[in-house]
Length: 114
Length: 114
Image (tube, rainbow over all chains, first blue to last red; front, side, top):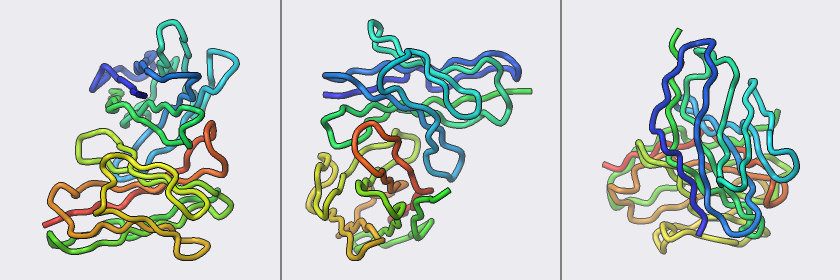
């Protein structure tokens, strides 16, 4: 069965510092991995995805993520955090033969303080 | 940019009543999904729909739930005999093709069962 774990409920960083939001996954076969962001009272907005190819994936708003197959991880990163990055972040996995359904992690609340 | 739209944004219903949540997916998309997010919990897959039939459903999606695409644009989720535990945010999503494409989410319907 597919699963995603986000070990941190909350991550606090100071503006201008680098941020990392952790994600590990379990899936049979090759994973499709996604990061989504959710602002209050809004739906999920796509940030980036890993399908195949380079392990470092670049996405929207300066975010990037590193796929590590041996550690089954897909951590989200940003070199310099902004206060406006404060939101709820979800990692998700989809197996290629599963009709595209997404299995989400429990979410990590990112708080960036000035 | 085209968006997935959901109505209503907030639905308050008495326990035991039926409720219909409506979604208009992006017009050229072919795969449609419903997800649920209970307050403070992760986003959970309910059902996927393709070619006018359910392609996959989760354990949550029991006989109380049904989906329909009554015309070329709307995609609805019906919940019969609502229970208190059905209170949640319900998100609709769509993609053009399956598998490795990012799903586009609506802003959700907040369902409150009294």
